[in-house]
Every structure is written in structure tokens, then in C-alpha cells.
Image (cartoon, rainbow, N blue to C red):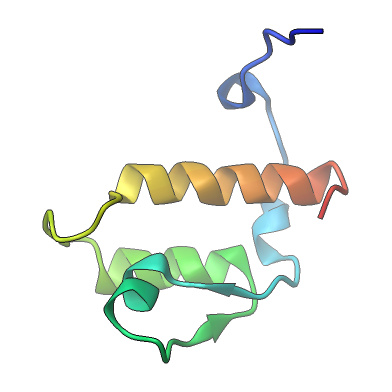
Length: 82
């Protein structure tokens, strides 16, 4: 059974960005094995905006892909999948 609903069109509560979740920065993780673990999606979003906003093409992913992934994790938290 196919579902034609795109997660981009789904409205969700951004307060889920403050929920407890252990998550690491993919940019820092790519550089070294020792990285800080963030306790919320908001902390990671803040870190990305301040530390990695001008990252080059060195990585196999870009900021837009990471932000999309963070939004999907927030949606999964809202739907109680995670």
C-alpha cells in the first residue's frame, strides 16, 4: 500500500525540539570520533547554526539535508515513534 503524504507537508509542534533525545552533530562526528552529545534537537540546531553554518563541500551531506533529518526526528517524537 503506497502513501502519497510527504512529511514536508505535515504540520507539527516545534516544541518537540525541546524533548529529551541523545543526538550527535553529524559534522563533528565526521571529523572525529569524540563528539559532544546534545540533549535536544534545539541544542543541536543551535550548534549547527553557530559552528557549521559555513561548512564547505568536504562532507557527503549538506546543511539542508541535516535540517530535514532533524525535522523528521521531531515529527517521529511527536508521533511517539521515538
